[in-house]
Length: 211
Image (cartoon, rainbow, N blue to C red; front, side, top):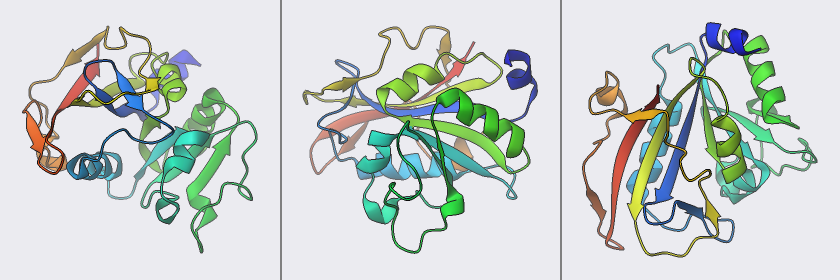
């Protein structure tokens, strides 16, 4: 399976906003902060493809799915992939008049990956793991060649969190990129401190690549 993952064209990436002080990513099932520019950054990253005939998949756990506002379930212009042992298309509560072909549900991360690379290789460009903590942890176990990048938003905040990025050294075997070819495509300012004026939160967009 490892060789198969590395040789096929779809890449796996993580995209996460994290409290810089304690690696916190959530509290009470929600995002701990409101940073509109980060939400736009997330949307641009996860929808952009170099091949206009393809789209990306966003892969998430059940709690992350239900943390999305119902009007945004499923996330538009992306294949929504949910990992859950008990959820199905009848109980996942998408918005009204949803094309259910944009939602796939699997019992495990490995089942999802295997199906996506076997049956969707001509339709998908990237898979983005978008949470929660166990989904990120499982994504980090995949090999270089398939596991590609971490798009990380560092948020400088003292907000208490109850969900965290694990393990503590999750950035080991990744290098931070200073320049990369698709920066102009996603339109974000990377490696630059920015401020959300509404709540005076500072944050930085960073990209790490598997080494």
